[in-house]
Length: 87
Image 1 (cartoon, rainbow, N blue to C red):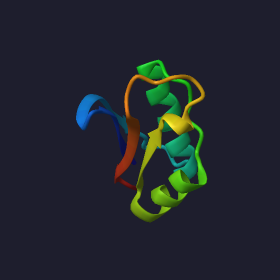
Image 2 (cartoon, rainbow, N blue to C red):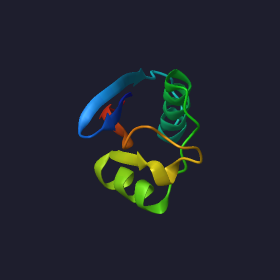
Image 3 (cartoon, helix red, strand yellow):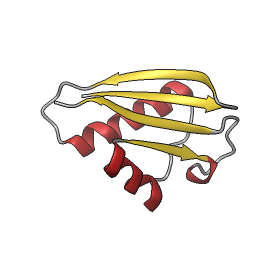
């Protein structure tokens, strides 16, 4: 599985991160590990999965974590997660 994370501000890409997981673990575990790794790499707190975020991710294999998903203040508009390739 490959997941692309994009940190966006004013419709411009600020940072991106490609996460790859070839383990035999479940899809959910791979996604949560990817979110944890990108948050560590970007020095962010882990975002909260709101109902709308979960629905978008289930429907489109992509979702946006906006400021409402983070406990601390963020200096970007949103963090997007996009599944590029699945096993």
